[in-house]
Length: 587
Image (cartoon, rainbow, N blue to C red):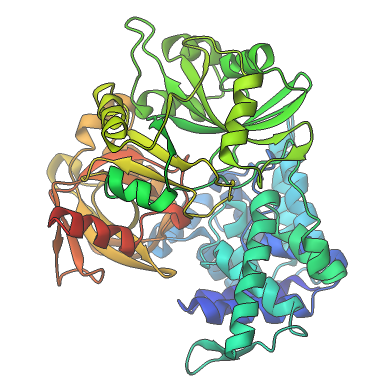
């Protein structure tokens, strides 16, 4: 398949905000994609070159892309940077400058998808002496053969800033539309922006959607899911299994109003466990090999050597997958540290032993997903905890099981919850003893119980430059929640960053993080590609006509960055906001 066909898809989906319309365009391209190119194409549609759990990255800086544009067009680095400042996007710069190039190469050839992704992967393999020149040569060769429009998306992919708005839900649904047309008659209506399904087909569609979502949740590889579905149908999908070494989507928990509400949802008796303010960690162990993954599938094994050591020593299992929370410990007082203190360890590549001594962690294990090569996802939680009790040898301040109380007594449950809060924990998790483990889903097998004014995870969608000594820096950030696949603004935050400067989160850092994501400049105001998730505190949620969510936050405060833990798909929803608003009013 020619790369220009993928580029034309990028153009179409970037011009619409309608999720179903995007799904339609993606499905049309998948239908004509040869099986041998399917996995690569699905990766590239989202601007990736490897599955999300793979450690390999392109490893190309914007500076190197500027040098490649310079080498291809003859335009100076300074002029390229001036164009970048004016256009706000390096891809648009590449397109603009290549369109002005008068002389075409005599040996120019059409780019094909297979060769483009092969070149991208070559970049990630270049290391050591001379690697920069080799990378420059690879990028330049791509740009020499690219049309101006292709150059736009090559450049964007290189700097990991595709900006076309294709979420996981679009890919999942497009796979269904593409390969199950024989089982369900799916027709997209442009005018209504909906798919036409009768009642029976709608029920069947929803069942298939659950199966495809589950297949993705346990593999984190849409390419594998699509290829399996095309070759083997739904029967093949049901045979896909999780593998040690490949992270799966973790189970998510909705919020309960209070202890009584928690019991109503999960049943009695229930397991109450401390909800720790730490770093969610998925641990894969096979023999002496221990691999740690973050919630966003980043491999953080090297950053937490004490966890690796503890798991090797204290987990008596040849092969297993564990779900846990790494909680920071103050080495002087022995008390738990807030997440912000250990968050700086997640990206650390040097002085790891030194920072591990400064901010050591205790691993709190609360679930097991696989044991002895067998999946435990369909095993009841009571049994999964019994397995943990049998295989984990607890060692205080190193590796322990989550503190737990099993009860049907509301008074005892309330006392346990109060004790968790007094100890500085975020609250408690309440779990059904009969519940299975449902990756990625917020279902009735467990809930979280936190204080009413719990912080919100929101995404930054716009910003404003400051004045005076903060001129040149973005100092106010517009925030949005999620509403059925759309983003709705809920307020603007400008306080809290100053207090986080000692942790390295400054106005300067935020501006540096955001600038590559700026999609539009309007004087002091900038529109931002929704990618930066932050945790926000507030005094109250109010009804408001000023924001399209219908709500506003009173006295919002920036609490912490969540980009290492959460994607845009994980932010709070409009339903969460409404529930919290009603709780304030005693409903």
